Image 1 (cartoon, one colour):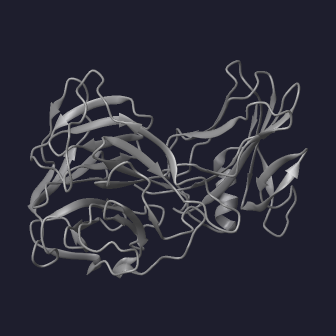
Image 2 (image 1 turned 60 degrees about the vertical axis):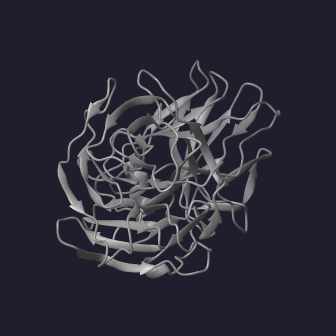
Image 3 (image 1 turned 90 degrees about the vertical axis):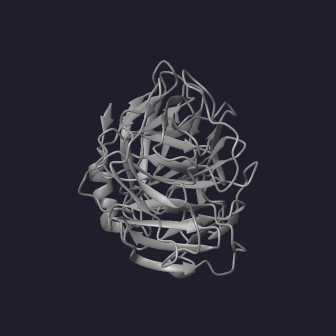
Length: 408
């Protein structure tokens, strides 16, 4: 197998320019985790969305979540271990990205309304009036009792929030927290026993988007650290916003800043994840089942275990993984199937596309390209990718994919 390591690819792309790509997780009282991106926007209907993946939370060796209702319940994502944490208010549950139960834990306070992933394996938790951070390393089966490694501290109700907060998140770049409350307030504050306003201030969420009071979930965009860009929801609408409610510029992964949440019930929490997202659709020149592009791990800067995957192809086929600086809009055609990468093999108007891996499809119909993400890359570095596969009987391609580096 010939492979060009992602460090070289991303360095070139970083010099060419940056964009953003990610997904947002939501958790709702039907006990379902939903992974969202997009939805597709003009002019080419990119990216795929709004639902990327969903799974019902359930029991493994340990029990699963029980019934709950807003404002309780939330979700958080650990990009280092690629673990999801959800709460029904009384207990914290751990799952893999595909919904495999990993463990449970009893928080040191009950009635949890918010979770937010911090650094060093610490999970910020709140019951609306108190907050702090707990370690997650020991969560497993049988369950463990968690303790506060930081705090607990009182929520700054009065100087910042109008009442108990309904969700919380942490930003490593500024060391600040962001939260929302049932009165429609979003507030940035520094952790500690005294109320200290954070770098993004506090404000009521303004129209449009019909959010109003009853905010239930919030999450920082961690591909844009230091800008205060965040997601917020009232359970049925999802809004991407800058501080004080200004709409951010549209991006490839979020061409529309305000969208309905396609969940089975009003969601009670949000979490950010650095996932590869897809656009367009795979194809096979002989109308055979199409292969799928995917990834292992999150696009965390310095992640040594990140990899790009191929699944659903024909064993023994010749597979090429190509990358580019931009998506082709509209897609071009290669041997009658769509090619979603912009540019040409040599420098063109949108930059080049080039070979990242040249390999043979394995016995299971797949391939894995290890692609460690260098610690020197800035957040927001992007690349686009697509597999091209020459099978014994056809030519096939996956959908296009975009990935962007993130911080903790």
